[in-house]
Length: 50
Image (tube, rainbow, N blue to C red):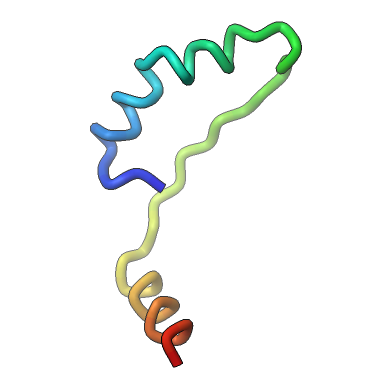
């Protein structure tokens, strides 16, 4: 979803993310960070093209 960890951090430091996590109607939210295996991602892209 994000090009880099820095891009993710910039989003999480920004106003949009802040407005979501501070919204009382959206309680008990959870954000998880996952690594993407580049080779597996490339294989999936190739499969989708065929």
